[in-house]
Length: 182
Image (cartoon, rainbow, N blue to C red; front, top):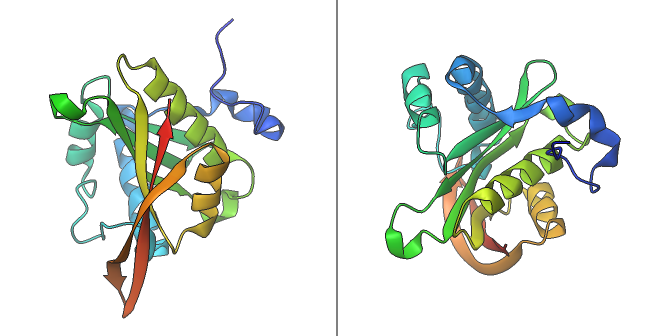
């Protein structure tokens, strides 16, 4: 029997087993829309903005989804795309033991249902399946305290903080750098 992408940490969301999966090129339009919503909804949680996001076009997202097997964008469907997280391996050989988690987002009306935890579990499982990967790194801003707690519950540890990392609308946030040893 195939291992599900959710774990015991989120037993109430067993129905998500079939709903958490890597995005394909056919999901590009839905992902562009979700990403735009994320950047508008939580501008201090992402370094990108709608004006400079590399995932702002369907063609760019399709190209990103065609990347090597070590890079993935995982989506949560309910039944439409309601959340996503990305993961990529460092491109430099000397740093190829690291993967980077990015872009975690769940639409507001689907939060507090275990979707983010299921996405995170799937990303960690993917990283563990990649030969030679020993760590996952991520950045989370002080504007995303719920996300930081989620990462810490999953075993991520704080290793540094950057004050005044992002500025938007006259506000500034700290970016916390976390890592998970696999």
